[in-house]
Amino acid sequence: MMQFISSKPWLPSRWVLTGPVLLLLFLLPSPMTAQETGPMLLLRPHCEQEESRCTLFQTRDPITQETPMINTGETLDMDLIIWNPMRHEINRVRAWIAYDPTILEGITLSLADAFPLPSPGEADFSHKEGYVKISASADTEGQTEDIIVVARIQMRVISTPSSSTTLSFYDAGPMPENHTNIFRGSGPLEQSVLNSSSLGQLQVRLLQAQDLEPEATTSPFPIQAPQIDQPSEVFTILRIHNLRATTEGSSIFLAWDPLPSSKLIGYNLYYGTVPGEYMQRRSMDSATTSMTLRSLPLDRQYFFAIRGVSDTQTETAFDQEVTITVGNPGSSSAPLRGSIVELESTSKHPQRSLAGRTGTSSIFLIVVLGSACVGTALACRRQCIASKHL
Image 1 (cartoon, one colour):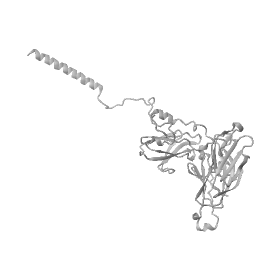
Image 2 (cartoon, helix red, strand yellow):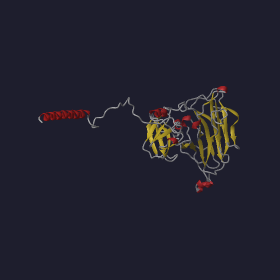
Image 3 (cartoon, rainbow, N blue to C red):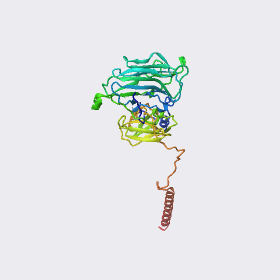
Image 4 (cartoon, rainbow, N blue to C red):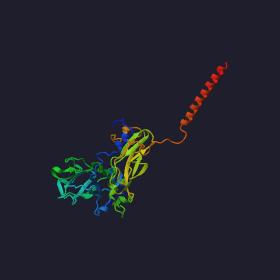
């Protein structure tokens, strides 16, 4: 049986409003992301240990996890799990996972104890269509754990025509007819609670013949992952939502929704000029949910992603990457909901006159004017005296 571990850490129209109005609009969380975090579907290496010691696949980019190298004939052993941070009562789950049947074949699919009641025809592989079909319900009461195992999936690599292949969730959506969804309640009260924005994909890395060492071509290629003693933190699968950006002049303004986690101590904002390659990082405390970058080159495109940081210095997964072009508000990552303009509050910082030489003194002007009047009067007196003697 192969063992996998995760590495740590686990992305409009033009506007006429400016100033404080945009500041308030931009900082307000959107109605969707301000709501409690919904359950997520994840694939992880199969684990029979305590949940606190189970690990995750390595993270490649904000929406992609990846396996270690796998050779032809070897088995990919996974668990489909629900990460349920708000502890919704989950009664039914449906997950169709798309795969390439010319590269992978299904071996076994077994439902976990949490969902023992399969829907007809949806607890098996469809090799012809290329889907892992899973749809099952809880027996009586719904499941409320923060991590719920749905099924164990075993697949074998049958060919390696390329360096990788992808497993992805198919047709996710809120309607009962969607092929990937999570539900609470039953019958007419059934309600979708899937956080579809969190769905990612798993990239299966394939070991091709040219990648083998000469002596390894005559013996099975060993896939051995180092063991770790520390348990994997659930914190690493959280994501910060609604990272958004707008620009004005040579500045970029960013804001995001706060991460609801007691382990959070701060955020790391990553950015660069190449997608997925972040050469810069800005760190902030947990109370900060916005940032301004100034004096950037105009018309330069930047890519941003953000992670939360825990008290053990582990990071969350990336959310969707955001891109924007400096000085071009039309390149905003989402429909404009405002801008960040740093303003000083007059209530906290009342305007005061500054000591110093900022112009001609009013007292000095009075003295000058008085002197002029006195001089004019004296000149008139002299003129009158002189005219009497003529």
